[in-house]
Length: 187
Image (tube, rainbow, N blue to C red):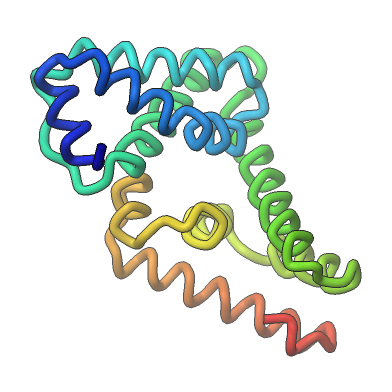
């Protein structure tokens, strides 16, 4: 069943649509959640909370452009809300560090799948460290998760042109870094 029909069925209270949405997107939500927070229990709790809220508010849900982007953005907000609630171990700072490490790790996994040599991975890792947190997150959503600009805009709450600017600047920084490292052909 396509996304729009699933969404409409959910809004009508059809439990099978609700279950299908959960089954279809759980792995994507869990993977993205673990990139934001290294606590699998917290991620599972946030996914559960997201789906409980989705069911409870189903009659008040508006039309959406992308179900996947809506769910990822909602999960991101839920995780941030949970982390803000539990400041005892300085989770907000930890979230930034984990996000940076997870996105860098994800980019390295992508390189491994493309069978790049170890030296190129090291150079890429250094180039990623030169990027801002926001640039790394946008690159992760765009290239690793295959999201459109509209979906990223919905998840992060920034406009399309800002996303494009972040990507352009990030790629320019990376190209400059590669040239300085003598690996200009890595991109």
